Image (tube, rainbow, N blue to C red; front, side, top):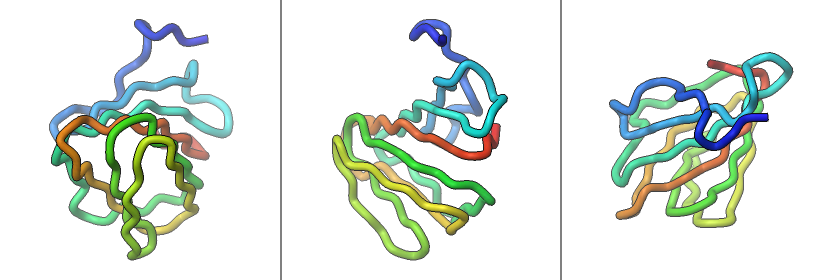
Length: 107
């Protein structure tokens, strides 16, 4: 169990991304993360990891490029990919909140 006020912060906010670990720890076969993307935040260089990843847009607008194809997602939309190059950006004027599941854990 992880209480809302006791989440572990992951990484730094320098890129306009703040993440909190929703799963109790990084053990097991996956991690669940709450990602908050500031307006205009962008991952400019493609990333690629040997993982399976899925996400659910809880609020805001969120663009994700998976395997060279851009997708504009809004509240309630979701995505999944495995081992493909990806990038993201928040094209909106409000923060975008995405619940992200990654297997195996990467943090």
